[in-house]
Length: 82
Image 1: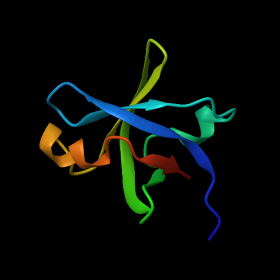
Image 2: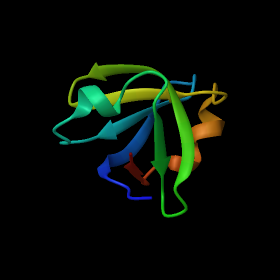
Image 3: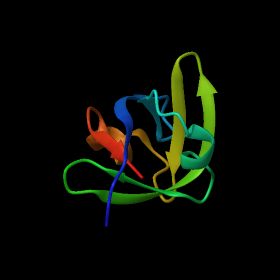
């Protein structure tokens, strides 16, 4: 499977498991759709997107079954792929 780099998860946002992605990917509207999968880090951990929004210069997403900051803090600093 080929992976396309879409940006880096730079931090978490709030306590409800949302992450900030810094991305200059051209096709964000296709990659950050609800229900799409993204792959995180060197191990390419698969996560399903349940929400997406833009906040300042960041793309904010939350994942299925990851509803708390402690569930997503491990992804801080990791690259994200589609």
